[in-house]
Image (cartoon, rainbow over all chains, first blue to last red; front, side):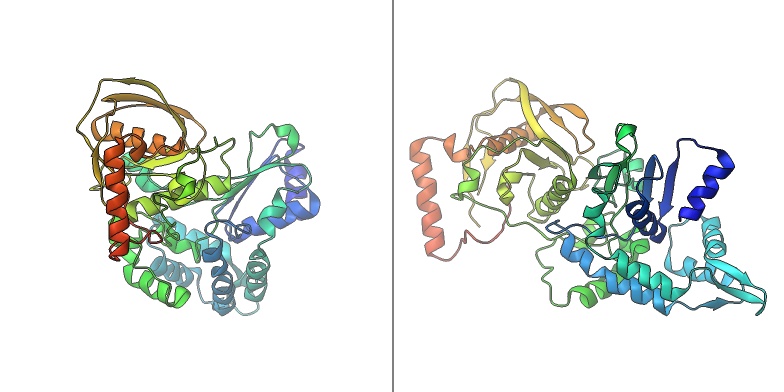
Length: 338
Length: 85
């Protein structure tokens, strides 16, 4: 990693630079930054299999991936006659890539072995498995905040097709941690990733196409975990593959409902995690709206969706909402609570 | 299920200012159900419950109904259930 960075500097001269890394290379880049300090002005990590810190709402789900990613890497076939064979394998598993990406990925993954006349994994599978299991170190994420020269650490999300298409604030299929490197870069850059939801590549495909494999995955991963409280998966066919744990809805006369909630000062990972869980909890209830105190968090956050026929299209996720104007009177309107 | 319906007076239209998750400030003009929902949820943030907005007689009625349901085992405070507006 450091060799690459020095080579870039040698070729292009000292310039502001951003490192963009995907998947496992994102973990490597994070480890590199921790070892050598912030080499790049910005690090953008797509989908690196790192794990949320202690106490994060999705932490216990994420913990379940590490073995699966590492053992999957260790089981990979090592040799291929032709990169096309690997590309076909990708195509079978990953349905949402643009057509050329399969071959490109296969060629990037393999190197030609002249002695044997075939192709071999450029990164030995044992090494890949090792990086996955060391990347699964739950300390890697929080450590990024202490990376020499790093700014704040925060969550960023990735875009989803659905949100582009509908132009709506749909819960996007990714989330991540970000830290801006080099304090002098004034936060214009950030290190972003999507914490893997287990075998992260599958999450990119619409889960509806994978309902069977999802069911099998859920069973193998969570065993007897009670999913009955979750809304039917098919209603959320653009939802992340893994549904987050539902939060317990507090009801009258719970004390948390009686105290004024505190304003949110900055939107960090735990706030985004809370909001995502609230959205899931609201749809599963089902409810038109949910306020954070209703799930025991005394924070000024509300989520609303008045139209459940098309979940997500009218979804509102509001932080520190204030009524600035109000007019007219509606009386005799239904106002049901529990 | 602990359902209770009450007539609560609400503004017909509201303008709400808030932050989005992307740290942008937005304003939402709402009427009908969304306006009611926004007022209801924002009340929650102020620690106000709809029972604070109804008359004392109705409040007592609600409490009694809730107590009865719990006694009959039809309601359970510990169990998550729907929140409707």
